Image 1 (cartoon, rainbow, N blue to C red):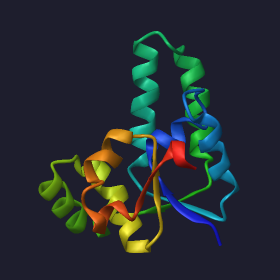
Image 2: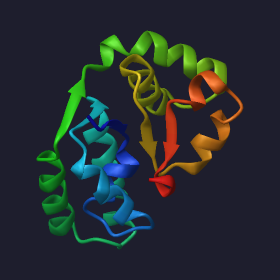
Image 3: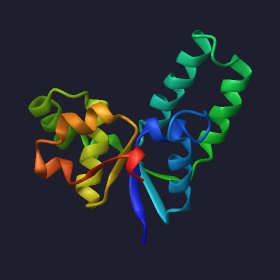
Length: 139
């Protein structure tokens, strides 16, 4: 059974053509995708930024958000992830938002896929956490 945790940087590539969008699309064939419940807010924020940079019109961004709202992602409440995510955030100076995905991958014992190569590099020196992460370009 193919399962993965996906972050907002991956989900956005399902509706916006960016580098490695084809790789992101491959994940839609997995049996189950997981994310912390905040992933939609993060994805909406990316679309909002694209509207204000002039990359997308507001109506177009709203349509893309509607597609994301139907994405086949099983959500996990952030409350159950926050204690571990906070510890990861403090130890490695990464945002709590990113740490929630890592904590979920660790909890489920499956890979977290991200397009954030900087995050993958930042944690590459920690074998306990790095084993749960993979960059989207390696899918």
